[in-house]
Length: 240
Image (cartoon, rainbow, N blue to C red; front, side):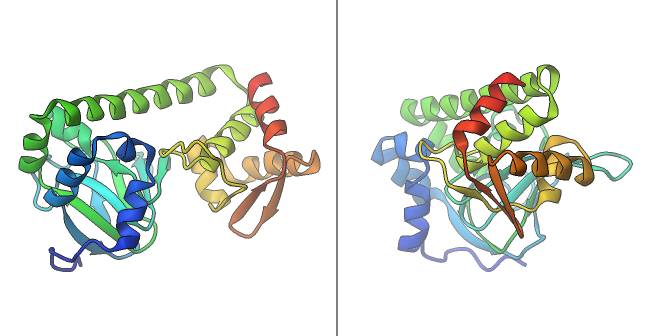
């Protein structure tokens, strides 16, 4: 269950939010206004932040900032098969789409670990949107999401599986939804989750990862994939 709201934002939480490129791009007044409007809550691993189809004005709903932990954005088919669309890391904000158009939530948001979550109520979000700087920032956030979705569509329709694996690993190295300028040298994600991102079976993904490992592009560890040659992954992603 969530802890009562009103917990103070720690220096570590603030550092996580400030490290996000989108948040850091806003003028300081807008950043401080958004943080001041938010309540900090704690959720346990496995908790649902929201479910697909939830009304936007559901209790506890709003615009969310992930201060600590990891969240998966996913959808579940009628036969129980899950597709993971993104994995969110600290610093990311999400949930704006339903607040803008008033329609139900488009996907599930589930805690992959214990979370510290900032919640900006929908009324406070609407008030922030009255300011042009924050409105422009939200437009930029939506533009980045559209670019990402177009990229995924292009990969799914025009590229082979190995190229898709290489490109998704490079995206995950930059934080998936975050897309930081500096990539990391490893991706801490179970292979099962990566398979659900790509829409393939765990066995099919394993064959592709082992092939990339034999070529020296990656190293495989427990719950972690080392990016030994990002340049090789880039070449494979562009030629698939």
